Image (cartoon, rainbow, N blue to C red):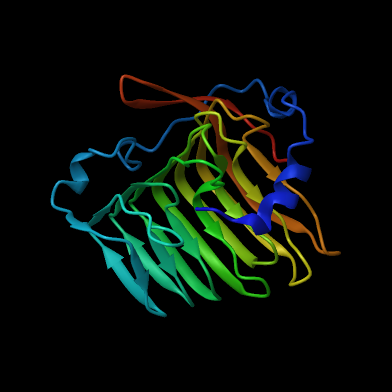
Length: 246
């Protein structure tokens, strides 16, 4: 949905030239995608038993599972407060998941597709709660974006800080600014862990952006099988590996 608070930061990010993508690519084309762990479309068979749901706010520490959501609501289709779990859900809306507090968060076995409208800055997942700290783990999940009213697939935004742990995740770009954007802030450093993470272009500026702000930094503690990829006949095909940025 509309988020005026991010206009300044997005404008600063847009200064990174499109050439950044080619600068990040290595020449190692080996590696494999985890078979059948990432749902690449809304109609994946694992969601066949899901129940239709309106937009949901999950209570602190609560859980949501086996839901299909196309309603965006006032903020996002799924809003998490202080901790919570989302499992085997599919979302196709203007803004999929908003994290608005501290704690431990898990998103597993999900398909999240965000298509903005008008002056939205659509995100698949956005953590926005200035001063909050937490651990976000995303696994076995596709984060799908488009070029229309778009922002980022997974955006760790203004002074939400902590640990970002991704395993078996596909960012499907569709022309969005970035698949993954993470920066620390005055609240502290970030720990970043990526394993079996795939970026399917196009992205307007690059597959990912890690910046250091607020006198703190991103610490990449795991960078294993992070690759450019394509989707051919519904199958994820890994491509060249990205070297660890720093």
